[in-house]
Amino acid sequence: MADGIRLIIGLGNPGKQYEKTRHNAGFMVMDAIADTFSIAIAKKKFNAEFGRGSIEGVESVLAKPQAFMNRSGPPVQKLAAYFKISIQDILVIHDDIDLNLGRIKIKEKGGGGGHNGIKSLISALNDGSFSRLRIGVGRPGEHTEVIDHVLGGFTHRESEIMERAIVRAKEAVVTILCNGIKEGMNRFNVNIIDC
Image (cartoon, rainbow, N blue to C red; front, top):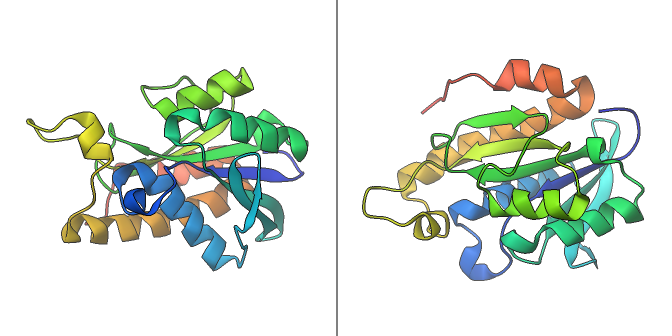
């Protein structure tokens, strides 16, 4: 990421009923980052909640689209245009069922990968060259539909794993902002999880 303001997006669904669900892993990481760096995500514009502040000296806008997962794109596109942030300076944090629970993986750019939030962003931005930080929530069991899985909550044991994943995700965001996406990938794209 080049010098300049960064836009960090956490994907999720608004509303109390979705707060602690797998699909809201992006929101959970965003809240943790905001708390650690004392950035209030309190402003509302373009159907998004956002706040602006500094993460280890890097000027950043933290945002949580409020349009539900599969319509996340337009709020992000409008925020990026408003703050004059290039697509390459956007980092999106989202859940991923193709990664084991608690694993994190950084991706420089790409397609939708079956994730409706990412598909919406690519459609609205007309470009997939934004960075992603994927948070593993695991695949559903044999008799569970994907939608029920991602909109379901974590068990106590899963919550403990997620807490550690959120800490690692925070560290990954700081690494990406301060040292670049390649360094982040080298450091965090390892198939190790501290369970």
